[in-house]
Each structure stands twice: as C-alpha cells, then as structure tokens.
Picture 1: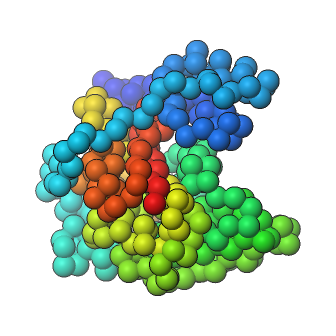
Picture 2: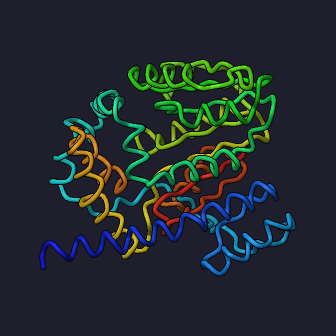
Length: 333
C-alpha cells in the first residue's frame, strides 16, 4: 500500500498534465492570433471552444477572465511558505545563506549544465516549450527588435527570441553561470538556417547589475531566474532600467500556489518525481534546491506588488496550465 499510493497519485498527476497540454496549446494559439494578454480559461470545454474559434481566426472577444490585480496596499514583505530546515539542508551548501547564496547558486547551475536541457524535457514532458512560447508572446518581441534574455541558462529562450526578431534584430543572452553559456553557444552553432536569425551575443554577468545602458532593449525575458537571484527587488529595478519606455518584460518561473491543495500536489511531484529523476542523473542535491526555493518565492500577487514598487507602470501575473504550477509575471515600463 505504501508503494501503490504515490504511484497512483503520480498516475493521476500525469493524466492531468497530458490532458492540460492540449489546452495550453489552444490558449497559446489563441493568444498569437489575437495579441491578447488575457489569462487562461478554466475548463476543458472552454479550451475546446477556443480551438474551434481559432480555426476561424475570430478570437478578439473570446476571453473574459482577467488576471488578479494587486490590492492598493503594497506588499512590502514576502510571505514564505513553511519549509523544513531539512529541505534546505538537502540543497547545495550555502544556497540559502545571504552571504553565500549568489556563489552557491552560480555553482549549482554550473554543475547541472550538462544535463539541464534533457531534464527539462523529461520532467516537464516537453510542456516547457509551450510555457516559453507563451512568455515570448507576452514580451511582445517583434521583428527587428533588440531583446535581452536574462538568466538565459542554456539559451532556450534566447534562441526562440532570435527566430522571432529575425536577421534584422539583435539578441543578447546573459547568465552568471559560465558553463551554461558554453552549452548555449554550442547549441546555437548546431541550429540550422543561421541566415534566418541574428547571431546571439552571450554575456557572463549579474542580473543585479546588468552591464547595459539605460533604455537599451525593446523586450526582455527572464526564465526561471528571478526565483534564484539574491535580491528580487533589485533585479526588477535593473530590468526596468534597461527596458525602453512602454516596452514589456515577461518573467517565467515556478508558481507558488496560494491554494494549499495545489501546493501539496506540487510538493509531492518535486519530492517523488523530480528529485528521484535528478538523482539518476547525478544531480540530486541541485534539484533538492527547488522545493525550498519555491517556498521562499513571492506569490503572484506579491510579485505584482514588487513590480509596482520597482516603478513599472503595469504588472500582471498569470497562472499557467497544468494546474497553475508555473506562472508568468508580465510588466510594462
């Protein structure tokens, strides 16, 4: 019985993910056709309706659900979901100590670089591609734009941005982990049709002190990086500084669900699926870091408040399928 219960729960979660995949694709297709930045519908019936509407390219009024907004009182303090000292102790040493976290987290991402892409594909069942396309669409990157991907890792988002901006555009990928940048440059060299996109500039740098002039970029993406910086408000201020007026940044990451049931499912998946798979690939400690890092991460509402404190003119956080386990903060300068 002890063995069967987690296996059965995993089976149910797996079915939910597969069922939600088609809905996520429908939502993204609808967004790309309309340019709408509205949130996802809440049922599979709605998703099927969107798919039918998409086939007729008549979607301007399909969505009515709006993202939640930050209350008038700004959130000055971020609530931390209860997480045991044992969870943090399992992570790489120093990853949650203020004085050492930047170096420890840089070392962590250097260590996982050889298996990072394979694990992303395996653990998300490939759905991370849908989440990333959604973030790029919300960033409103366009042909000819100068765009920046912060915490670019192995370059997945940056290479997708290069396809969007085309040969007349300019893409810069920045990360603090040198091994990730080596992997990114190698991946870029293996891409076909290099004439169809710009050569990406890879920069080793700090997201808390971006090495770029003010008002340098038309669009910014940040995938799975805001949760890992030592100072989230400072990172948001830096994003705003280098973004041009009226332009947008899309910040994709794990979501910290406010619903305790959703948080419980997420924790179960991390403990019983993600970490065991990472252990098979020799990076168990590095992926033990995920659960406590998510527990410390601001909720969607708190992220909106922090963005407003950083002087962004608008901020909206969206939960992403399946089950709101991922989220995307979209901010406008």
